[in-house]
Length: 422
Image 1: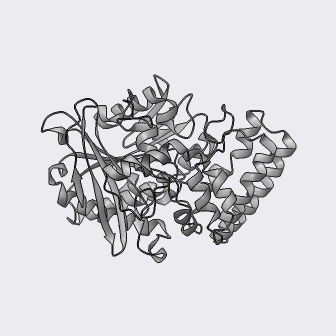
Image 2 (image 1 turned 45 degrees about the horizontal axis):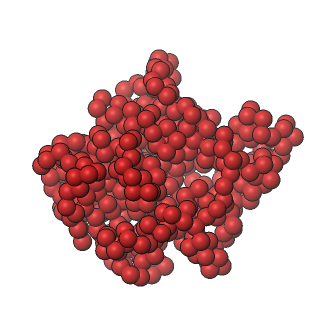
Image 3 (image 1 turned 30 degrees about the horizontal axis):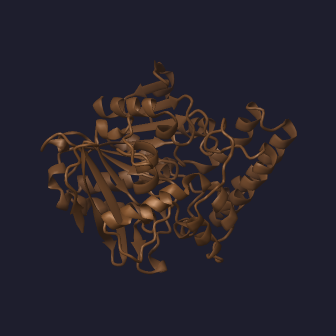
């Protein structure tokens, strides 16, 4: 089910939106924005955006707070990525944003299940929109989206090679991605200590708790590892004065939308639900909630029974046993076995997925060309640095936290241009 919207002359874009049933009872919502360039907008690259969480809404947060043509006040965004590309926001996994399932047994529980749903979505997308088959395709993502994307990309590449899908797949870009959770968690103490948020004794306390998580992961106790993570985060907050984990120079603000808090409070079976609330509170605000459940719900022809929330606690809870697993091997696979561009970008001020942790897993890659990448020259760019060797690129983005396009819009836009035009 896809709905076409008339061309919007003021905001200079056209749009289509609707649902794709990726499995019986599992309905995935997507929203495509294309520049008003006449009939050849498909000549510009197609950028898929996948949000984090897991369970956050691409069509909501990523669209209105980061890269879409309008901001949450419905004002034109000067740094929208629509300047250089078609933008496809997918509410994924099913149950996120406007996506929904007919019953609770249909939520995804693994990264592989998420990837399978997304490949099914892409098959249907190209059937409905064959004009995009030759359009360069890139997958951009953020946070937990950075965990979903490498596996999705691997399966999409295989489907293309097997001629199940016709697509011009060019690459992926992992933004502050939850690729190797233990590398992120394992550097929180050093990061906070270096920034003077904790002292040496507090650093040692945190590192002792991290070792417990590391032990659980080594013993394949993934549910236990996530539970330990959920206990570690409030412990750190009790030490660091509640800084904003998404941008450490800001003060923390845990004012979530009332709808989301009501949803959380009604789900008594979710383990450590308070940790989910606090860890993901950044995604929530009442203005966006009112917009998505008000005029946009009517415009987008969303079923009455579907209530939009920026972060689905049900989606998160069903991935509890997957949350702390790493997918570094999938990044290695893409680098060594495909010609896809693999881009990683990291915000200097992010604590959740700090640059230290990102560099740790990057330097652990088994990619045969890693040493050559490590010794390649790091180039300066406006608002950051970039290093490239063959099909691997890393961007260091200055003055930005977890949400790079929101914190450093101009730099994020320039990064997009470099990636898709190189």
